[in-house]
View 1 (cartoon, rainbow, N blue to C red):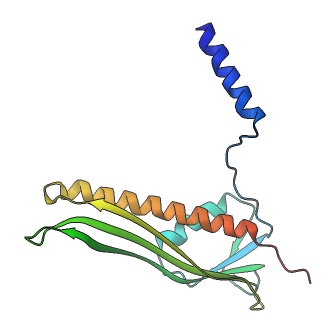
View 2: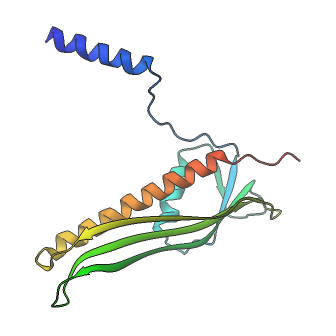
View 3: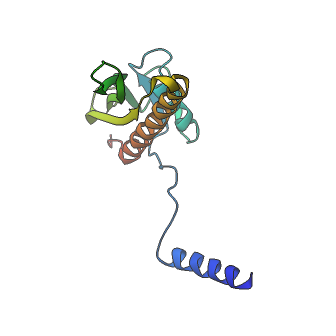
Length: 164
């Protein structure tokens, strides 16, 4: 028991000494943001709003009052058959999440040109497990969406407001 405690504390000290640090929330350099172009009920926009609520940034409806405007050009999910049997039964699907956006000021100055986020996942499929595969698909889409929002948050953290 004593040996394990000593080993764990030595490992912790080694990690702290090498500069290892858990990833923190990105520090955003602006105080207000408006979201435009997202479809009503967009799961991606909802996840983005949840992540932004954890920061000091205030979400505004009026883009003219916000410091930055995140304008969605595309926010869609798709599912394509990748592998099928000779009988035409699908054995593997490819799930896609496509999000295109740009970041601008209310005065239409582009701070981040149109950026495309593409996230793909492959999913095996068996008709005998249709319900379980449906739940797996929903879970994969949620994970893809969280990954895309994290990528977007890192891009937002890199934005520096123009000096007037």
